[in-house]
Image (cartoon, rainbow, N blue to C red; front, side):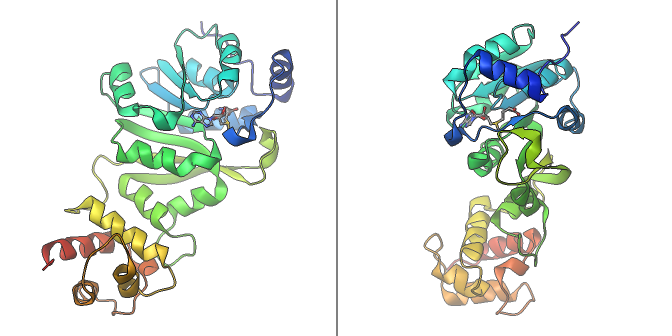
Length: 292
Ligand code: SAM
């Protein structure tokens, strides 16, 4: 029988922190979860089964890791802060299906790790993420083609909102399009600052990103589509035509751009923020085929 989780409430968390005289490092975005309801909600929405290999990014003192270890076949926990390793060895000592890796997750080859740990079958990612690197972590998982089924993560609420909105809203941007290209986002819960120790300055949300079997749209040149998207939102207040013309990442004449934008049937003065993912794909496919 796997040991029931012992962490996840303020009393036991404080006891561990005092035992090891741990001091929080702000630069690592350390806000530890101290609410068992939130932990249970994350585990249930991640839909973990005994067949699953789970990657946890930033286990902290191992609070969520204990819950994950009870639900999954195996947990790989990647933690950057060396001073947390002896704590993790203590709090996770009785969970034999946990592997702790003391590394910066952004420097690890996660595709290789998933291959080694689950023979290339898709893994699930579950984490209370360090907020300062939310976007590079999530985009890295998608763009480096780590075999995965879903990502269930606690992130800043404002960022979660950006991931699931569509054209014409103020939060819509390059992140919304990139996430929706690879996955189906769903906000599972909003989480207030008092569920963490220390309390973060912002509100949080748990979001599940279910990876699509195929990307949401067909595009011949993925990199060109994302350069178009970045150029459109870098100059949000400009028309799409001007945004694309001014971008250092693109090399199309004004005429080529105007012709491409006209094919969308929205007028030449349309702004990028009004375009759906399908329309960015249409634009990229047209420009690719009509480059002089
Ligand atoms: N999972 C724990 C919890 O819920 O209580 C801790 C979450 S805390 C928000 C983020 C964790 O990520 C911290 O333990 C921090 O040290 C770790 N971390 C920060 N940057 C990291 C990086 N680049 N690679 C791996 N872990 C990182």
